[in-house]
Picture 1 (tube, rainbow, N blue to C red):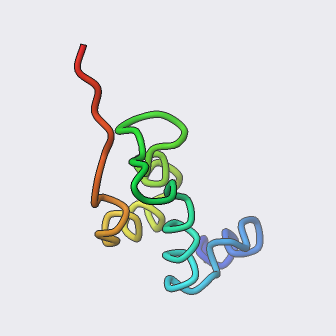
Picture 2 (tube, rainbow, N blue to C red):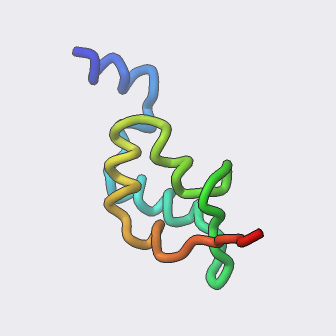
Length: 72
């Protein structure tokens, strides 16, 4: 019942996984630019929305192909 209620409140949760994957991949900066390891532009941000998004994001190798690291 809760899943059905959530689909009314959050229609994005009813999108097919393949569509969500494509949206997540477009979230990345254009190669060769690398996303930061943390913050609003980081793919880790996508894993903190809900369990479904976390599972999907962690299953997309393209999101984790490269990270920008800075050493100070």
